[in-house]
Amino acid sequence: MLCTLIQPLHTITHFATRLYHLTDHDVATAPRWAQIAPAVCDTLQGAWIAAHNAHVDFQALTRHLPGWEPAAVVDTLRLARAALPQAPGHSLDALLAHTGITVTDIPGRRHRAAFDAHATARLLLTLAGRYPTWDALTAVAVPPGLPGGTAAKHEEQTLW
Image (cartoon, rainbow, N blue to C red; front, top):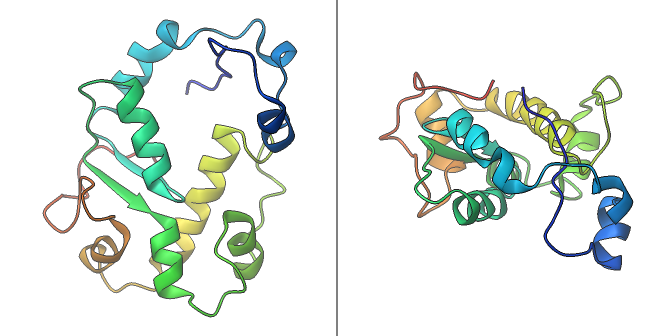
């Protein structure tokens, strides 16, 4: 599994440092996107993508991986809003706390791709138990206009 920070083309803003706890020093020796984009594209081509607020990740990936298209995009935020409307909040952190999902054993920390992906996968598995079939889940979870929905087959390559 590829797990790396990316050295951006521009300096990291103060806002981004506060939000993600990353500085220019942290990414000084990280690869540039162009160095790893082919490997990322190969890994994700035709895969099912699960993300919390999936439009953000889908738009970023399609912007940086021209020609890439996943088999489908599953949004845990959409699932959670439908399955847990009474939850006090629908951020990833709020839902992990509300559902009692433990993340202390996940290596890394929040706002790092590997950690967030693992936490999102746990949330997806928890929410999936509230749907009788995969088609019922994807009918709710696949955002309008994004690949997937009931026409996609879950037997295709997955990320987990």
